[in-house]
Amino acid sequence: MKAVLIEDELQLRKGLRLLLKKLMPSLQLVGESDSVSDGYQCIVDQQPDLLFLDIQINEGSSFDILEKLKTNVPHYTPKIIFITAYQQYAVKAFKYSVIDYILKPIDAEELRQVLDRVVQQTTNNQYPQIDLLLQHLNKPAETKKIALVSDSKTLIVPIEQLLRFEAMGNYTKVFLKDSRKIVTSKTLKEYDELLQTFGFERIHQSHLINRNEIISFSKKDNYVEMSCHSQVPISSKRMGLLDEIIKKITL
Image (cartoon, rainbow, N blue to C red; front, side):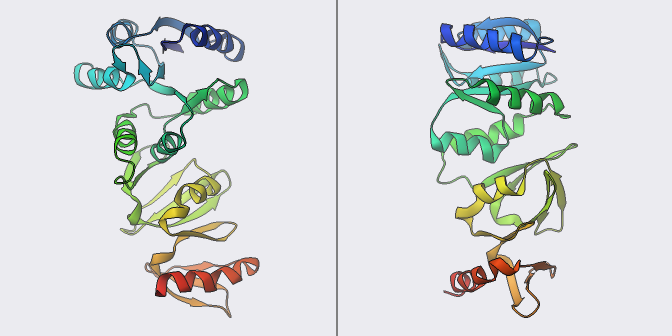
């Protein structure tokens, strides 16, 4: 696998270069740059499999590079890992968009985990997710969409269209209001953390639901019925949560 590194901090570039050599000896770093124009040309010339992109670089941002690549070299769809300084809203935007990133200062274990994920990716075209990422970064209060990534496709879905989630080990089956289903590599815990502020409730170790889609419930039989008429179990230790949910949706 070949990679190009676009980063305007020289010391960080040197450190990342050493870490990559240690963690992934088979990775060939075929180019480095610190600016939009030079970085774009380096990528076009080398067409590497993987890009490491700092967001803020000389002459603009790495999104300027990606926009030029998307327009001028549409067939080229590399895997991408962003490098970013910690900002809570920005990190959440990456998670909604299912885009891989590493935080500054770079942690070796975090980098190893990200590299493992990227190597296992079966689809490279991340431009729809990058468009969603930009929406979240530029208008975080207005953007209410999430990327659902499976082995074969990526769906960009309004959060209000999400009905429920069901754990499948380290995978999650997502049920949409239009009856579509998609199995994603995110865990149920990750979705729970992302969607708490959008009215989603963890009613069972294996189930997360959109509380606004509940149409009935049974305390006797420990389940809620969703608008799609599926019955989702409530764990006994979370039965107390049901009263709180009902209050929220009946106010």
